[in-house]
Length: 368
Image 1 (cartoon, one colour):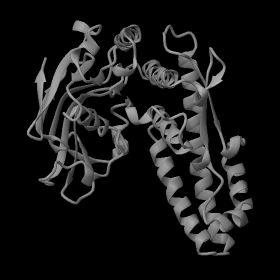
Image 2 (image 1 turned 90 degrees about the vertical axis):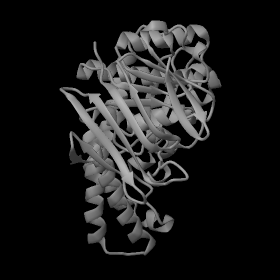
Image 3 (image 1 turned 120 degrees about the vertical axis):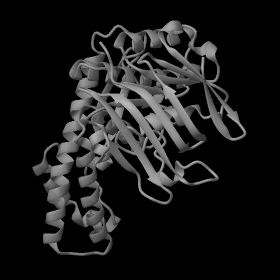
């Protein structure tokens, strides 16, 4: 099975890269170099070819190379589902991020209709033991990979909730205003809940029967304090209406999918993810990313692009080899970073290699 792929990538005044152009041939990509050389910046550039703020969740002004701050541009030729596309995303100095596809202005949501990109970065290593916000974001990225319209539903929900929260803080009593906003929240919220449930079901199915050395995780989505969520628009609208008095006292909305949490259990041991060792927690994350990739490949006929930042350093040699074997079996273009080339020895000729160095504050990339 062939995968979605980046054929070429050009970064102009992006982070530590003044002008860097890379050519890829569809195989997995190993990128190595010392810390701070600019390896993760390459992965971040690719992540911005999907909807959202990329793997660092940075604003447009944070992405411009310093000290010039001239604005930045990422250009890629990418093999999508049906054709090769020219994709650009950029921001002028002080401006908002823009997107073009094949030379025409496009929305960020449109990126999800030509490419699917998954990622795992070191900041996610504490996912299971930190606040629910990070787990919701993780689940929403997975849901977005299956349902590109998940982004629109999330934006609609958040906008209506902001307006409702403003009414709550101002102690507004008009039921008609609340009713209109709660109706919007309920419709969008029901879509969000359905997309999340479908994503969990697809991950579960993709793990069943998979031959992998990474652990299987049982997943569930729960409301605050482990409560059951309202699952349809009508019941969510009722819950919002009944919660107005409590929400007004709190000054914010306390009911809805923005309060949900993702729970995971390490199946083999029957242990909740937050009680597992650091290594086990990392292995569970890798397992879910691979399951996400397998499910997408089965659904769409093409494997997604996978970004794995510093993932090899946390695995022993056997698990590194197993990870590379799974990626190659999927036919996925995975882009992986590490501090030295030896971490990718078991990938060998199955992948491309690039060395990154920092020369006077400018990242330089050499084909290995």
